[in-house]
Length: 136
Ligand code: AMP
Ligand code: ZN
Image (cartoon, rainbow, N blue to C red):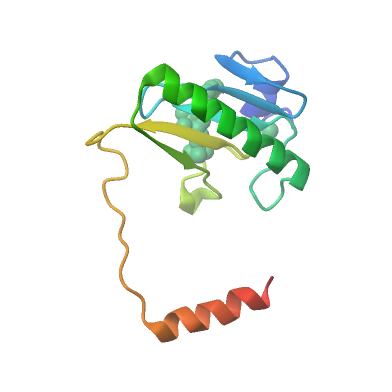
């Protein structure tokens, strides 16, 4: 996958501010941070989205994400953090190599200021429940 920016970072052909790596996972600072300490965790193998990643690499990314989150909390003193993972363009994915954002948060930092939730109809929940469980 030579055209993938994150594969190029994994291969050392593009630079990154590397925080941590192991056999399966690489973790580096986002070059356009939402807040200082904004970090990306990626599998070294190329998968486009969460639909493609193997269980082993998902697990490896999760474990590294937890450890790095602890380090970011300590390093930044941020009182909050979001773990964010975008899949496909409508969800805000711009790089098609799965990645997990760790975004340190402070009160009133102007990120995700809207969360347009609304109470659902019980019948709507029931219909969706049937549809999704049928696909499990
Ligand atoms: P997403 O919109 O979820 O696909 O996020 C892609 C993220 O990758 C953005 O936050 C970018 O700032 C970040 N990014 C793009 N290129 C680089 C790079 N060369 N090094 C570090 N982060 C990058
Ligand atoms: Zn890639």
